[in-house]
Length: 425
Image (cartoon, rainbow, N blue to C red; front, side, top):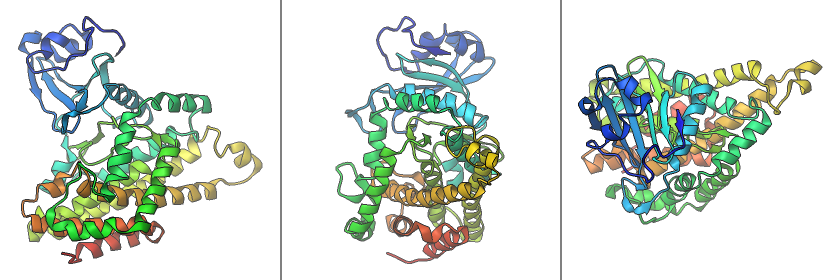
């Protein structure tokens, strides 16, 4: 349910464990799924992200997740205000993802626009993928599912599939999400490459960081990719597809938290996801015993390969079966006896090239900018952490500078394996 009314709450008020039941107890979409008297609900605040309040509410018949935006960046505080409307765009993204990639995004039960809150499916027994990767747990079909998710949302959110008026209207809608893209533009594309105020990095990594920030050709390439990111509205992005935005069991994969959603390049989500798998890969020597390190790292590389191959296979399938938009119309190809396969191959080559470059940028920002990955950050030995982060930073630099050399997956895997053995610090 999309609720644009104030529902008795004319002013925004942040939820709390002791106020949530009274606030939502009369909302049918919540009460009917949770069950029992609201005064008996079990309510836990579980938000460990950077921006929002997140609660799990459990009653006699079930559980739901309640997510509410705060009017500031939670990890920084009120000194960094952030508009509540970001919750509106997360809701819009979730309902679109549910149509474009069914059974991967959580189902939304209720949305209160003035209160910037979303009530959605409680994913159980799923846990955050990043924690599973740190623990050395495997997830069946992980790369295949993420590749399919990226391909389906990329293709079905573009004018390869959508009617042009619908897609342009959607671009207009998401263009109102100004504050969140601005965070991506600064924290991802700009701040890692100079001494921005909120940056931090492992002290022992400083020689590598200093050299990186002196690399003018690298910074020019990153800014060109930022130009493409800001100007390109190919498709609706998740916008922040990292291993903390993926929940999994041993056999099931779900994607959450599309609050950074906007329209942008088809390659962006794929590149972000692969970068986070590479960071998990490089961090493993700090998390695994020697006897299972090689096997687990090899499995992560298989996940990365599967991401790309699954993306390509699903994109080609949709190209053949759902190419109903204004782009590459059948009237120009099949209906004149021409194959469109070469055009699809060329587009996929371009997507992979850009995905590798975006991947390199994400590998940098997660160790040099504001929001870091637990994969590295929880390594207490800072000298060891810096050595592993250095491998990650230098591979990221290589992918940005010459992505065309690693579009072949065997070359990409060989590059990761080589940097995994490199002694930098």
